[in-house]
Image (tube, chains in turn green, brown):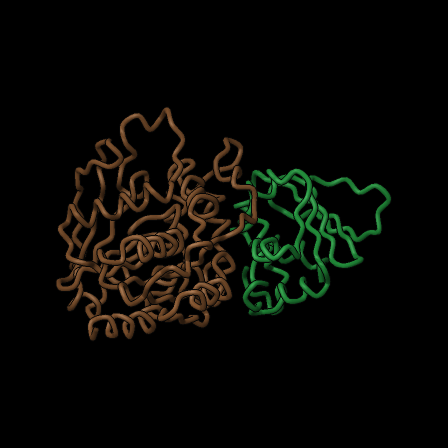
Length: 122
Length: 282
């Protein structure tokens, strides 16, 4: 599922345009699984699944399988409907150089929202 | 194609607040019982366009919304460039009472959302005789900070972009796209540091948990309306306020979020109109 992120994001010209000043690699950890997601000027260039020995990323988002599953529902329940909702409930940890995450927050919300079932927007 | 005009009229008011001259923008529509509307943090009175454009509200109510100083079309006071904006409970209360006096409003109904909902609780506690009834939207007694507020005002993060991005998830899933994005546009237009300065009241200075049970609804009726999808002021927090205040009435609005009057006026009015009827029948 996470691997489909590249195609889903890159097919959205508006989202890619919004991220045109964003080039970074961030780490997404869901339960025991981990991915490094590289972005170049708004386009996802690679989604690489771990495990990694020494993963290098600007920031990391870490949550559980159950929480991520609810976030990815077509219509998530209250409290699971947004990355900030998960952070508020302390079930998503955002760690690292968060300036990149916050300066591009709308991009990251909408990009990860692409993983919702049936492709509903964030 | 001919233009149509909304019934909303806007004016600028010169008003002394906290010993300083202020230029405050006020909008209103309708006639009847004054209904004073308080906007959320980091936004402005345009959030109440749905009420001001609805004849079911305006035929019996003079609906008034003002932009707080530093917000919308209101100006910051002279000297603003050398200070940090930070809203306190005392300033907020003083400002509302000054506007009520300046407009000569006779015991208005006050409706406030988020920080407006919180200050409405302060008003219910400290000035119940001044108001006919109080309607708190997304009115919790306290909200714990859940992100680093410094991101709202630093040169390497665009303030308007981040403010709207932070609150975007607070909009309920059923909000029409037009209303959702107009609501977020207001956030994108906020001045540097203003949203952060409002949150000083919301998250730090305006904590009213210890006094909430002292509100006397016999002196001023209190209605609480909160959106199901708000994770800032959650339904649980609203219900906790309601259970602490005898005689208060709380409704959790299905599918709505943190900006009910702005994100989805059509659905919100289904909840508000019965409350206004109850108040008029008292």
